[in-house]
Image (tube, rainbow, N blue to C red; front, side, top):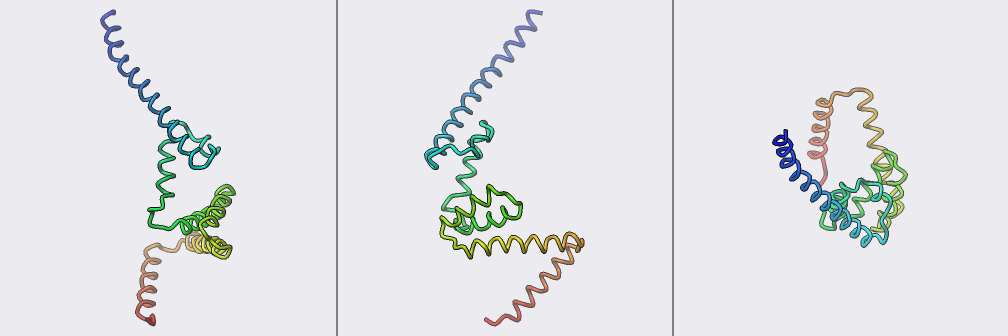
Length: 156
């Protein structure tokens, strides 16, 4: 019995120490992410505060990467795309955020209205196609034929 107990202690003690080490690392990574967020925004916004602490460092890294100036899509257009999606969901938080961000990156009121209209148009035709159960392969074939026709008949 004592031998069995000793084996359990020998097995579980390193596991326990590993858990403590990982837990300390998570706190450290969390505090680092929190400090970067405060340094970036001047506050620790609720949207990050309500996120699970153990997952915040990864979410913050993802947020930074998607907002990077090195991305292929310029910031103004990223914000207009996200605004169109936010308006369709709809999400009042996201709409507010992306309108303000789009304007900060130079989007005009007309560009904002047009982005929302494009989102609405996409949703409209999606409903028509999905609701009428149009065959996807037939749709693709027709679309490819339309693109070929327009390409061949364009005036360059």
